[in-house]
Length: 114
Image 1 (cartoon, one colour):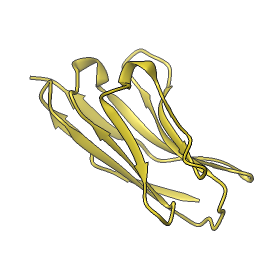
Image 2 (tube, helix red, strand yellow):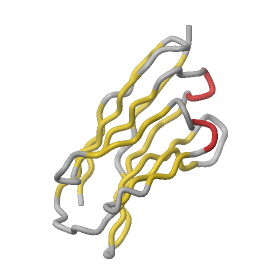
Image 3 (cartoon, rainbow, N blue to C red):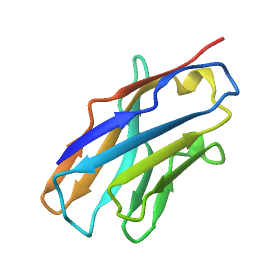
C-alpha cells in the first residue's frame, strides 16, 4: 500500500488547511484511514481516524476544529483543519490500516505561526 499526502504548509493562527492522502495498492473493502501527528519534542499521537463503517475518532485537542472525511471509493482521506493554533504545528502522517498491516505516509509539515 502506498500513501501520498499533500496539503501541508505555513498558515497563520486562526487559519485553515486541508490535508489529503491518497492510498493505492490495496483493494480491501474493510480498512481504516486517519492522521497522526508528531509535534516537536513530543511522541506521535492520533489526530483523527475513520473506518469503512464510518466510525470517526478525534483527539480531544482537535474536536470541533478538525474534520476527517473520505471519498466514496474509500481510497482518499481528508483532514480539514480550521481555527489552527501554534500548538498544531507538527508533521502530519497519513495512516492506512487493514487486515494485512498498517502503512504510513511520508509525512507533511504543518506550521502555524504569525
